[in-house]
Image 1 (spheres, helix red, strand yellow):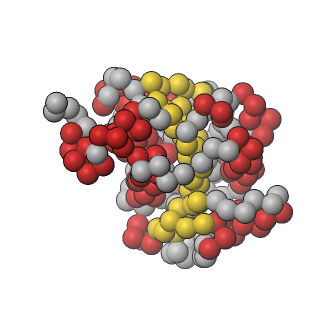
Image 2 (cartoon, rainbow, N blue to C red):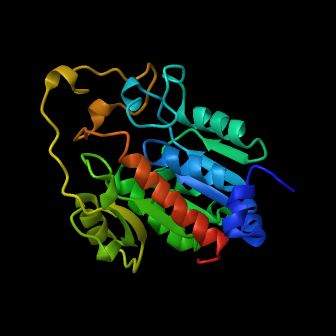
Length: 253
């Protein structure tokens, strides 16, 4: 019978579509990368998604985040993404966690119920904790490396963390994961050398903060505020979603 996933089924087959429908994927970080991950997962037929983020949509998100519009500024990203998911496929089961993932709240998430984890968070501390938790619970995970300060969307690659190069974030992750005895981690990273942002205080979040009222996580608290483009983090997110969908659909994990 014809349905919204008929074109997808032509490529993947019914058995794969059944696997996707029965899968629960947790996406940690619903920003420039994570938003596009969610978008593609839902449009590919994934049946259950957990959304984890504590940010609100900000004016500066409009340049790259799929959930950011003038109407959604000031709303929680998890709420906006949930509404968008339901508009695409109301049969999807959505669980929202309005918080940031941290080592201290790691036990609050039902990791044993996840079929796949997407790490699209910003901080090394959270990334490491998420990888360690996934390893502990034996849940497949894929991590996004740096997508900021990049211009070339074609430079993204899928690789094991220990086979990456150029990406400063991947370098730190390699070192920290090696210390903890982690043998492998699938990542999406860019081989492009990061561009140094132009120093212009007239458009800097440092001196002109416009985070929505009540925002817990302000840009001014970050050590570095990266530049970003519409066509770079989106591509990273779509590549990640492609890996997740194929891993689940073809039972590659």
